[in-house]
Amino acid sequence: MGEQRPEELTPASQPAVSGDEPWTHDFSTAARQQREQKQEARRERSQTLKAKAYDKVPNKLKNATDLQVRFRTGVVYTAVTVLGVLAGNIPMTLMLMVVAAICAGELFYMLRKDARLPNEVLGIIGAMLYPLSVYFLGLAGALCVSILLMLALIVWYVFWHRARISDVSVSFFGATYTGLLLCGLILIRGSLPAPWGGVMVLLVFLSVWANDSFAYLVGSKLGRHKLAPRISPKKSWEGFFAGLVGSAVFWVVMTFVPGVTMGVGQAILFGLVCGLMSVLGDLCESRIKRNLGFKDSGTIMPGHGGLLDRCDSLFLASVTAAILLIAGGCIPVSVFF
Image 1 (cartoon, rainbow, N blue to C red):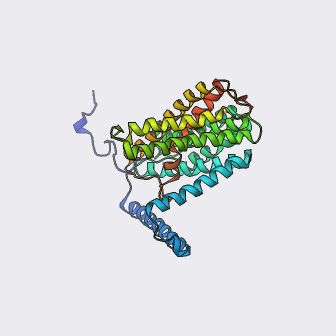
Image 2: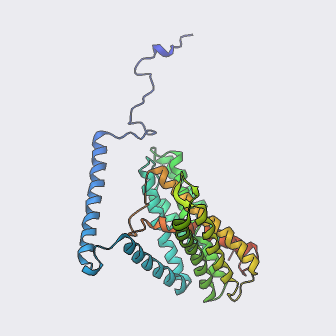
Image 3: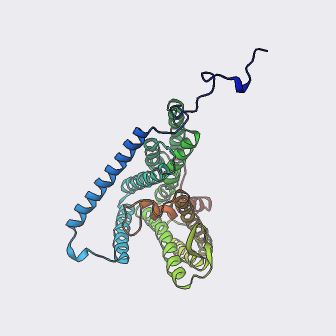
């Protein structure tokens, strides 16, 4: 009685659906133009910096082929990685923090292009804190960072009305994907005295690189059967199995590291599993880029794309290697320092 039918609702009593409501993501024309102007300004600054850097490059290095650019970038990346791993615990931890931060930033940039609104500040800080916390506190540190990060994201979600629950999810995912998964390398390095802890971590890197290289070389020459044509059309089953062989080779080398208790058969099995997870990590990042409409995650590594493109295989491989070595009793490590 006395209730109005839906068609009799007055304009004042009807629910508002304008873009000004806090739960919507519609921007006004002025705000959209301002955002586009800022993006254009960033692109211009980037082009200016690239032009200045190119002018300083010696003439003999200019006009390089794609293969030459890819090779030079790979050499620099490999040299920095090897030096960072072998330099000591602190340098390697700092290197992983930088890698996690850059990869998280590239991931969040791609997500923003897909109309997501991740909290980049909290996500990048969380990604950086994961390796640092595990270095000092073991897995207890990772647990503390996860809880604090979730609490911070909940506060942000409650008080910033434009945020959606999906934005909280991708913010947390970005931090754990790029930061937490790398912590397996911290555990492996801390299990053995210097320099053998660094050697073990370097062998994990080499197994991942061998997986990628063997898969590329064999796949490009002999690849006939597509592995995942909808996600990564260039990958083949022939290259996949060749990559597993390359991964297993360096896991066999691990059996010669002092302090490691692992038989050859166990090493081959662990190498195959780790190689499989490397491929899965690569396909995961390829799926993310394909869903978001990106060819590369960034431009920080000429010829390779972004740093996330280079580390995608490493994320799952590093945490898998740590789990296999610890669960298999191969290294004397306590996950809670």
